[in-house]
Image (cartoon, rainbow, N blue to C red):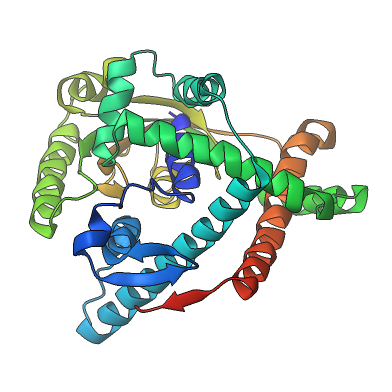
Length: 325
């Protein structure tokens, strides 16, 4: 299920443009910021920061408070940038059709091997999203991409020297590296779950891990019976994957296990995962010709993000932004 990361990335990427559904909240919320004439409500900031806030677990209350405050400030900066870009999109008359949104949603489903629309909607609900909200986010992703191509794209240039340097770095990291074939069992945790609910889910995952380690236990059968993830029907099979495909916590656990090893519960945005490594094998680094498109895409994304930050700062300097948080 290499697509797990893709879906997380897709949700995270489109979240950069927000859901824009806080019109009612503005009547009852505190105001976190005013961008020209647009209000950003405190509840919007809290909702955006919630997934990262849930992972703050420093035992020192002072450090924990500082980390949470920084996450709130980062979320607010992101929302301010979104408001500024939305204003530019409106002024430039950039649009996206329903068919284009359909195509993007279908692409996300295909990448994650989810053929059942109801299953996909259930997965979104686990992230606190309705299909209507998700489609709106995808539409805004299309609009954002078009704005970036127009305003940032001309500045982004990838040279052959850039690509060769990136390939040299890639070969140092990947040469003789291994890939693993793993399965997992997911205990879902709602994006808005309380600390008590998160802990209760962890205990269920720990019990599953203990059960999975029993001699003779068939992990695939256990996954079919106990997993709450979309791969349950396939016995939790994730297939073969290399480093850099899964989210960091997931990857660390997978590559730290021996063949036949079962992990302790691992937390991701989806919930708690129990992994089992079925097989490991060493793979040679791919050739330059094979890696060139991937490296080009990676460099393009990195440079785009750099110029995007600069572009948003330029918009912010020209706008009337009043931060009240």
